[in-house]
Structure formats: C-alpha cells, structure tokens
Amino acid sequence: MSRHIFQDINTYGMNVQAACDHKCGFDYAALGAPGRSNDIAALNKTQLSQVIQKLPLRRFVVGDNAYVCSETLLDPLSGVEKDDPSKNAFSFYLSHLRIHIEQAFRVMTGKWILRQPL
Picture (cartoon, rainbow, N blue to C red):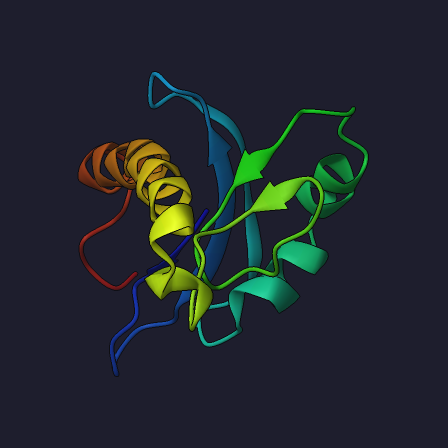
C-alpha cells in the first residue's frame, strides 16, 4: 500500500499511502508522511485508515507485513504461522494479490514522479 519515493541523501522523501483495484487503477492516494516515517504512522494520518476500519463484513484491504492485520486489513502471515503448511496457501494468494499495487506504483513512478530534485 505504500511506497517511499525520492529516498536518497540529496532529496526529500514522501511516504505515499495508496489503494488500487485489480486493474492497477488508483482508488485513493495521499502523501501520508515524510519518507522516513513508518507505514502504520503514515496510514493513520490519512482518511484511508478510517475507510478501512469502516468496511462492511467480508470486505478487506490487502497490505504487506508493514501493517497490522485486522478484521478489515489482511497481511501475509509471518513467523511461526508462515511455516504452517495449512496456512501457506493464504499467504501465497494474499501476496499474489499485492502484485497489483506493486504494478500500479511502477506505472505511477514511470509517468508522474519527477526524476530530479526540484
């Protein structure tokens, strides 16, 4: 859900919190916080956090391990759970879904992000 952009020593960074659909189209994007902020802190500063918390039953947002799993925000299993063969399929399919947001960010950075400092 997030990407750290412009993260080198001579530029400023931005933590972008975004959501996209299965066709790599952005449904939401916000500059969550400075680039060195963690993803949870940046998410909590955006309206997207409140939207995720208020999703109806059986509606979910898929994130990565940077977020805390909840009833409406799913992330891949980690630690001991990750090694459990009965739960392996869950993480596999969840990670496969996250490929769409990675593709969407790749398209966005190729078209909209400045490649040089201002």
